[in-house]
Every structure is written in structure tokens, then in C-alpha cells.
Amino acid sequence: MPALAVLAVSTPARAEGDATLAPKEDGTALGLSVAGTIAGPLLFGAGMVAAGQKSDGLAIGMYWTGTAALLLGPSAGHWYAGHYLTPGLGLRVGGAAVAVVGVAAGFGACFDQECDRGPYVAAMVLGTGAYVADVVWDLATTGDAVDAWNREHGLDVGLAPIVIGSAGGRRPGWR
Figure 1 (tube, rainbow, N blue to C red):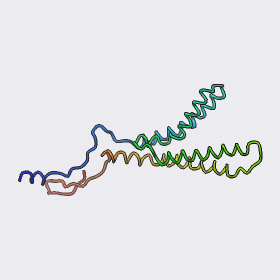
Figure 2: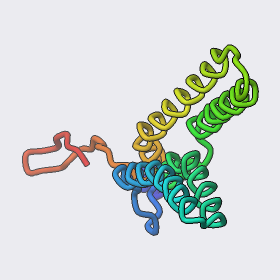
Figure 3: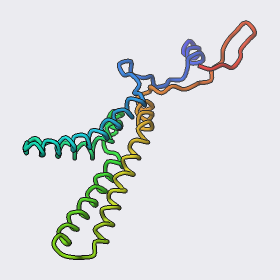
């Protein structure tokens, strides 16, 4: 009988957030993605400056670092939220590859002779468009990634209906 009384007054079990975890912030995720997005062109530009000063080793390092930041930087907010492989990252790498192949093939085929540049320009434009669209996608979905992480770890905030006992009797309330 005492067990029945305990069951009657107990509340349903629910997942509680880990006390050692703090909720992730949308603004932090977006800031990381924006910073990562901006870092690529800045590093690439720094490589151009270094190349102009005959610092070939530094220039090559800056070019490669800038290229990596161009591809990976927009996903930094998703990484902060625990999502490491995003559709935007895969499509961005694919778009960049199509653009680079279009440029390289166009230079190879049309460098010293007249040719139809249409297919090469189309590949470059389509690849660049896919890259830009996927950067926007990753930036636009950082908040969703943070919200998902907070939900997965029991750190989301929401209202739950409860019954409140008061002098006037029981009434509905929110917790």
C-alpha cells in the first residue's frame, strides 16, 4: 500500500539536462561561421601580399590555409553545435571542385587558341553559385543546429503545464 501512495504522488520521469553542460548560444554559432567565412578570403589575400614580397613558402601556406578556410569556415557554427558533417559542407566542396575544374579545363583548352569557352564558363558559374548557396545555407542553419544540440542534451527551455495548489483551490499554471 505505501508503494501505491508513492506512485500516486510522484511525478513522471523526464530527462534532466547534464549539470556540467551549458546551453549553446545561437549568436556564438553564427559568429564562428561568419568569422570562418571571412577568414578564407583574408588568408588568401595575405598569401597574395606575401607572394608579391617574394615570400613563396609563406604565400603557399597562406593560399592553402585560405582555401581550407573557404571550404571549412562556414561550417564552424555547426561544429560548435556538434554537427560535423553538414550538407552545406559537402555541397560547398562539390561546387568549388566544379568551379576549379571549369577554370582549369578552360585554361588548358583555350589558353593559346580560340575555342568555345561556354562549357567552361558554365561550369565555373554553376560551381561558384553552388559554393555561395551552400555558404548561405550553413550560415542560415547554425541556429537550428544549436537548438538541436540543446534539445538533445535536455537544455532547451519550454513551458510545461502543471496544477498549482492555492488558497482558492487548484488551478492551471506553467512551469
